[in-house]
Amino acid sequence: MGRRARRVATVLAVLLGVALVAVGAWAFAGSTDHDGATVTVTDANGSTLGVVDAAVADSEAERYRGLSGTGSLANGSGMLFVYERAGSRAFVMREMNYPLDIVFVGVDGRITRIHHAEPEEPPYRRYTGRAKWVLEVPEGWTTRHGVTVGDRVRIDYDGGGGVGS
Image (cartoon, rainbow, N blue to C red; front, side):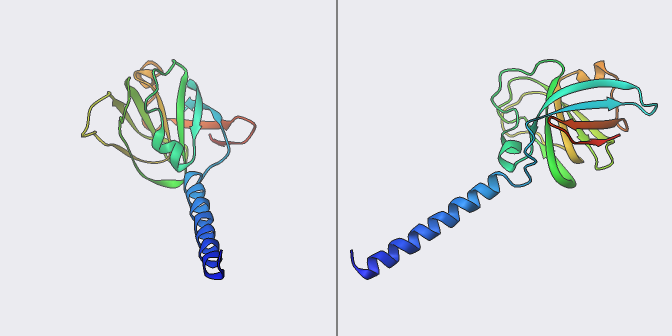
């Protein structure tokens, strides 16, 4: 292999390495390294309304995938979508096989919006709200537990650390 061919091969290898690092960084952006969390919802008096054992989606790839393609979600379980900061969020029911309650939680730990979402075909409806966290639970969970906008959310991550009231 000539000197020019080695140089080209080296440049290509470096570019491939940079591309792989960039893809890895995109996939894990914002990741908290938490696999699960216990989410507790309380009312204005501090009374517990409900508790959810949630899987955590805290990377861009995990948040995009969410619960898509899963068969069901047991009562008392859910998925917690974690973002670095509060912002406007939009969720869709892409490849969902069952209905959900989608609970938007602000940076102050208060519920800002609740949607009751049904599985659907494209084009998908956008369920929007402002949130730092979004909790998906089985449809009807919020109604059965009396959870409403303004209630407080506490998040205790598996392995320690927590946020909220």
